[in-house]
Image 1 (cartoon, rainbow, N blue to C red):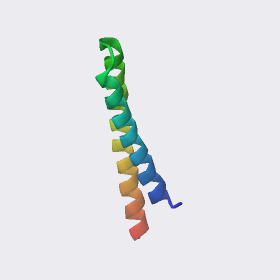
Image 2: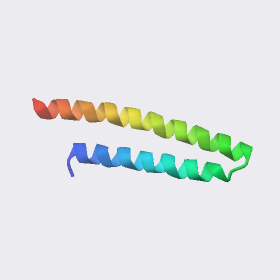
Image 3: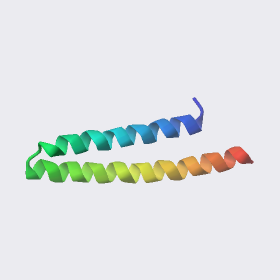
Image 4: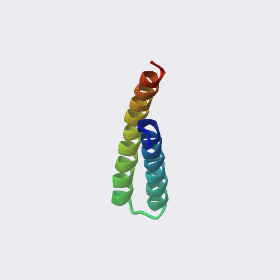
Length: 63
């Protein structure tokens, strides 16, 4: 796999994790829901970081 493919897969996995946590949150008590909200926010940050890396990889690929 290329670096670009790896980053795309990582982004996909982060999105799947967000979906999983969101599903879990529907049946969670308040304390657990807060934890899941935290985890969702962390996954969103990971997506931002991975997208930034992906942009760099794509720019370097053009050179």
